[in-house]
Length: 131
Length: 251
Image 1 (cartoon, each protein chain N blue to C red):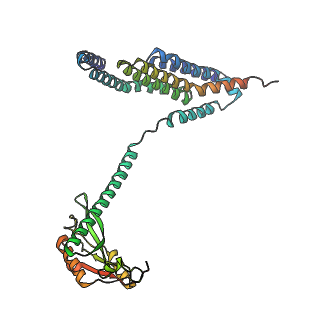
Image 2: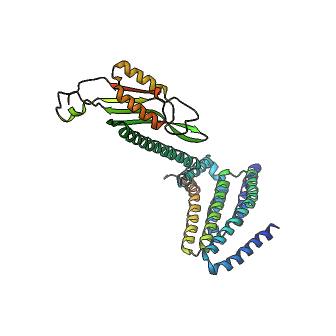
Image 3: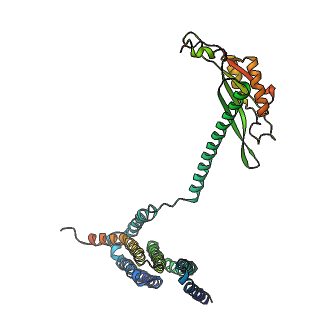
């Protein structure tokens, strides 16, 4: 039922945007952005269920909580970057959209820095020191 | 041994399940590559964990410390949004400042008006008018009332001397007319109808004892009293007129 609602909203918004775009491209963009934000916020609540399942899984097996935190941060960064990039892309600014995506990628990579440093330290510690 | 092995396997299975979930959750392909790298590192860490435990035991703590440092440098210090409280505080300070400016302006205008009035009605040479406004809250709004007016006159007999002989004559002594207005709650809303402050009373009596001020010339004082009473609706008994004690001052 909710799926039908979302699809209906999307179709309505699309038709309205097609009608409005000829006269006022600005309002077409606003409509698109607002629809996107609405669907995004609506789905954020649904994603929470999945995240709860993930947390449960992580808690039951002895995965360190720092792993889960990092993974959730990655998901969040990916979603926000993707969402912003799509809105900007709708407005026709392809360049800015790709920059937003690039920022998202950089942040995800920065997340990996502590892990990589730990692994590198361990590997260096594995090596026999000079003897 | 078997328990340890099952623990290890359970960890690996859990982290791989987690990775699959994450892959499903990620919005697009471009992000997936990067996320896959991080998740792959996690899987690597989990698989390596027995070796890591052999070598160094505090791997989790180290990782946590690194993460904390990262989030401190990258997340919190990044963008400092002004909080709503901060904005409200700023607005309060600004409005306080503005109210102070408005009070100052009102005081200045009032002083100019009184001075003009006195000069026109009594022909006295008014050196300075100093009005002190106090604020009272009437039905939620801050409204001013006059708490003290000090009128400083140039002495009449000194006027011709001031231009002629300089050192021989005593300098111009100001005549101070101080008006005290009794407080009245219903009239406090309008400026010009106000109340006296007790500290002003104390100050004036102290000054009198010190011999700095004496009673002003009755004619001038009466004229000033009358003028102020007429135009600012102040009762005559509340007006006190004083004159500074004569002191020789060399110019």
